[in-house]
Image 1 (cartoon, rainbow, N blue to C red):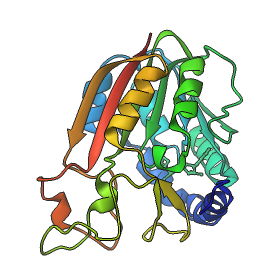
Image 2 (tube, rainbow, N blue to C red; image 1 turned 135 degrees about the horizontal axis):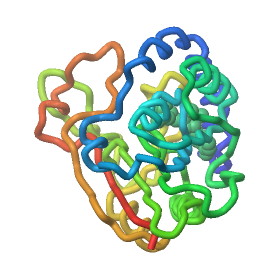
Image 3 (cartoon, helix red, strand yellow; image 1 turned 30 degrees about the vertical axis):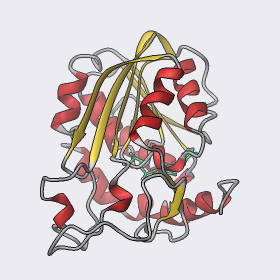
Length: 248
Ligand SMILES: C[S@@+](CC[C@H](N)C(=O)[O-])C[C@H]1O[C@@H](n2cnc3c(N)ncnc32)[C@H](O)[C@@H]1O
């Protein structure tokens, strides 16, 4: 199963055409885009004046939101050329201090201690087979005392069915499985890596971070276009988590 990550990268090469196809909609969204209220609250004034690095930056809308919150610079990293070029064009059009370079994480290609804040999530950690290597890279990028923030799908989410009548746990998934093939993702065949909450927290600690904040949220950060309400989103289950950690 996709040991090298090549199939997932190929799946993203196809899926990332949406970044170009949806350029106009994203540009409109970018004019007013903001981080989620939970993110704004957790980050407080950490963003003000910060040099931010955003691995797996995707469409880059969060970069514009970070710039609006007062970031001095935002450096987005992604392996999709379509994501990088459309995000750069959008940021330039709006006069935002964002720049984008290609990176295959966990190798960012950036110099050590270049960031005050590393921000990521919303569909990022699930593409990384080697979480300790990724956290070590985040640690290397941060200046002493710098911050690492993740807002991500809760690791239990692969188990939730999207039934609207009642909550069902998918019989074909396990919380403790190392991965599964995503069957809803626009590019079929992408392999989602699974990391349990304890694996994420412990890998973060072992990489040299102190956990400042860990929270679980009932709301999903993303809903498929065809589905307005799944029973799993009715407030009884965790659908997202957020983590703020400080580089020791
Ligand atoms: C679901 S998107 C989410 C990104 C962003 N939060 C957003 O909302 O657009 C995931 C992005 O990660 C990128 N990606 C996946 N694995 C990667 C890796 N190992 N290195 C760099 N980029 C990666 C993909 O190209 C894609 O743009």
